[in-house]
Amino acid sequence: MRKYHAPNHLHIVRKKSARFLLRQLCAVRRLCAVSQLTQTMYILHESLDLVCIATVASDNIKTGPMIQLWIMARNVHPVESRRTGHDATLQCAGCPYASNKGCYVSPLPLMALYRTYKNGGYSHLQMGSPEWDSFFRGASVRFGAYGNPSHLPLEMIENIANLSVSHTGYFHDWNIMPVPLAKAYGKYFMASCEPSNVAFAQNLGLRTFTVVPEAPSDNRFGIECLADKSGLQCIDCGLCDGNSRSANRSLPLPSVWIKAHGYQTEKAIANLN
Ligand code: SF4
Image (cartoon, rainbow, N blue to C red; front, top):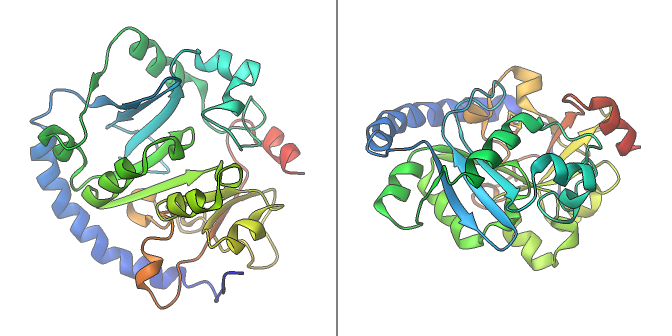
């Protein structure tokens, strides 16, 4: 069981201010670099069934302007994928909110992305190319605006994490993959959990991000998401970046909990119980 110490989120926030300055400097450099690119949305990865599309501009109030990675089915419309339960077998495997059972991701951006993808509207960005490096260097990246980012190759995740100044990521299929693989992805991502399986994930050494129906009375889920608790944006918080930074600390960073939210909150709570 992970050793848990009293929440020290204010300490985390203070440390973030240095990171904030660094990010500002990187943002200036990054603006120059990205301006050399011709598009703000790219295909990063395709497999037989899945595609990962990166988008630059984000009007997501909670995250701030992070690069967002969307992992979607290649050949099934997102609305159809959710309606039929196909999503639960592929991009959203392991998530109890898949198939319209409480997911907070609106179908509208998914529909727009899918339409443009099928019309050939996105170029490929090649890992290792100068354009790839310009795109990610100094950026903040949100892995998995939709879908499990654990569908991406580990070497690609490592590459992006190394180029970017910060990242966040969450994977819900940690408990249906081999433990060594879950730990490998857990270096970069939080294990998305429900109250019923958070202890299991933490026993594997994963940091957890748990959706709860109401504020917990103890600290087994870690600390409350700092967007909800302190009004931070993910781009300035960056707490949800898996285990990689904890390896260099005397105390591991805390796990995180958040109250069920989104346009299907009631369904999400029903599926938590
Ligand atoms: S804890 Fe921080 S990084 Fe994680 S979701 Fe909340 S604001 Fe974003």
